[in-house]
Image (cartoon, rainbow, N blue to C red; front, side):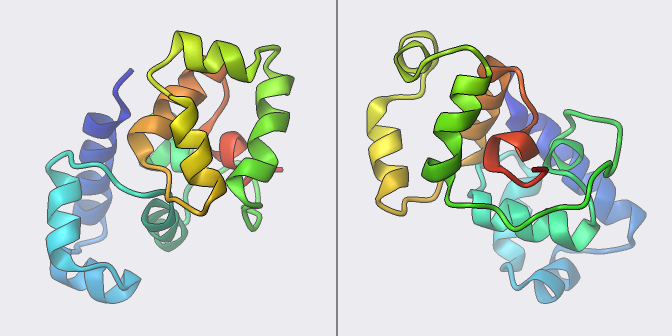
Length: 144
């Protein structure tokens, strides 16, 4: 499932419910209004920026991305480095890294990039969470 349209819709709805425009939300989250405008139009977003929005709206990543109707059912934790946490989540799912590469559009080069500090994008994280059958928050260790 492509998570970007649902994220765009959820972000727009959260902004509307909070009476926020892109400029005001940008000031509150230190995200440029132009970036926020792009996200409401379905552009990809980095995990770091996604986390800032989830923290501001006090919600899970899955709620923010339209993958859950529950706003928050856990106390969010500081996320460990993704590539320290991800192997355990893959193992927990009963799958292997090889199967991830074989059965998704996630390539080994993504893992190499993330290991070097590259910022994962929501589109990749959404696909990975779908394949591993876990929440986005579980995928990144936010709900541990």
